Amino acid sequence: MQPDQTHSEVTEPLTILMMVAHPDDIDFGNGGSVATWTGEGHRVAYCLITDGDAGGFDEEVTRTDMATLRRDEQRAAGAILGVDEFHFLGWPDGRLYVTHELRRDLARVIRQVRPDRVVTQSPTRNLRSMYGSHPDHTAAGEAVMCAVYPDARNPFAHPELLADEGLTAHTVAEVWISHMGDGADHYVDTTEAYERKVEALRAHKSQTAHMDDLAGRMWAWGRSQAKAAEFGPERLAEGYIVLDTR
Image (cartoon, rainbow, N blue to C red; front, side):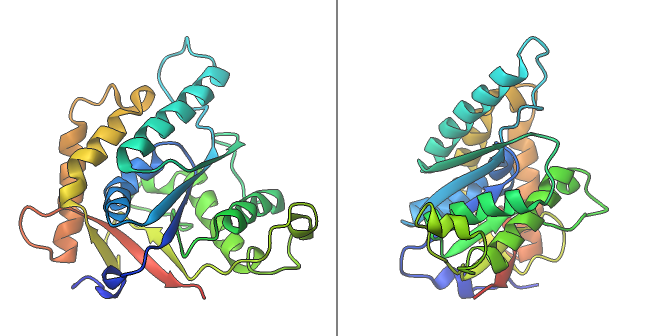
């Protein structure tokens, strides 16, 4: 299947908002894309829904300290990829559900950032991928889609955002759903960004320090996506399903 080329012909700088469940989700699934986009001059902002306080392997680290550590790690990883704008929502890791309050918090960030493109996780369980179907990931994807439509664009949804915070409605033009299996309809060539992606992942020391072959795993995953995209030998890619949400 040939990749959709229409989205790679953008000439004007875009505002791209990454909205995911955990610190490190962006770096695993989209790190190469983010490095590519910032390198092209686009503004990229991160919205991390949970603090990732249920992650890590060191039992001596308190959950409060883990949350602080993971915020610091995400800032360090973002700096490597050219990102310095972060929105940490602080929802509890492992207990994420699609609620009215979560949709409001996501709509708030969308109205603040006013992105042309939102990138998020799949709201659909992938029966062939345990990682891709983490319940926080699917909840994040569904809540983000609800925030994009109808919440952020509807001036009468979450009226306190306008009345109390002055945040006017905003329509997101497109949503990109991270897609780790077959069936993506657009791919970003991330070959030149591979080293920076791995470096960003290594900044998440609490999550990746135990991985002996992190670079090899990321290379193999990028190659599988590039093969699906028919990008040719020795290329790497990250795949998406792109939705027109105007």
